[in-house]
Length: 265
Image: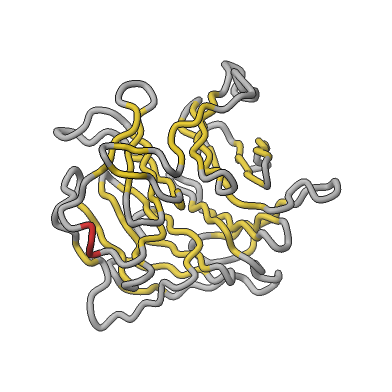
C-alpha cells in the first residue's frame, strides 16, 4: 500500500506490517531498513495482535477523526489502527465484533468501512465513525459464497477476486453481469486485485501461479494488456499490486521484493 511517500507492506512470512518512505525523487527509499509498525504477538490496548491478514487505508473522517490511519485486520476478527505521525497503534473497538465468524478482507470507501466475513458469506458496512451498528450489505434473496476470497476492492461497486481467478462485481447488493475476456487464459491463482478510479477504467489482476498481472477494461471485461518480467523468475511468489495513477506507476510485491514500474498508458 502506497500513500504519498509512505509505503506499508504486510509481510505474511514474518507476520509483520513494515513501513518504508520514498525519497524526494519518488523512486528510491530514504532507508533500506524497514520500521516494524505492528507484528503478531504485540499487545495493543490490552489486546494481543494475531496474524495480520489484510490492510486498508482510512482517510480523515470529518467530525470523527482528522487523521488518516492504516487499518490492519488479524485472523482473530480484530482490527487495529495505526497512525505513523501521531498516535502509533491502537485497537479499534466494535460494538458487536463477535458477530464476525471469519473476517478475511477489509476495505474503505467514502469514509465507510467494509468487512468481508467469509464465514457468514456477508459483507458488513459501517458508516463513517460508527463501529457499533453494521449494515448487512447482501440482502435476501441474494445468495453469496465468499469462500476462498482473495481480495475485495470498492469504487462505488464492490469487486471480489477469488483464488481461482474469478471476478465478481456487485452494485447495491446485487450481482452485475461481468466476465473477463476469454481471448487470454484467465488468472490461474488470483492473489490481488486493483480497480481503477477517477478516470482509470481498468482492473488489474495478480496471477501468482503464472507470475503475471492481467489488465482488463472494467466496464466490458475486454483484455487490455499484461505485465510479465523479462528475466528469469523475478516475480516468483507474486503477492500484491498497488497502482498510483497520479504518478503513472505501479508497485508490485513479489516474494521479498518490492518493484516500482512505470505504466505504459
